[in-house]
Length: 41
Image 1 (cartoon, rainbow, N blue to C red):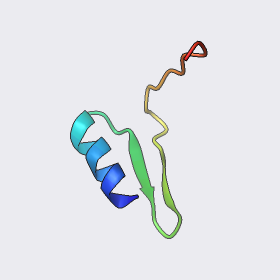
Image 2 (cartoon, rainbow, N blue to C red):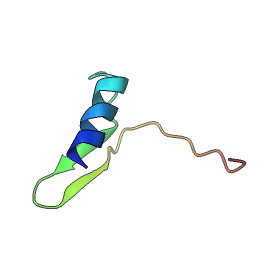
Image 3 (cartoon, rainbow, N blue to C red):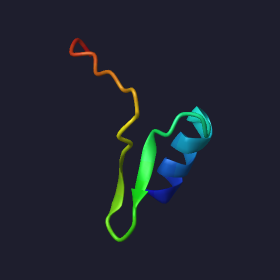
């Protein structure tokens, strides 16, 4: 899982905080991440 998160962070760069670390729990989508879900896909 750590490798996947690291690759996502590298792909989107530091200016887009997509995934945040929750210590002792894991990862979650950042509060200010602008993610849109397309219901057709």
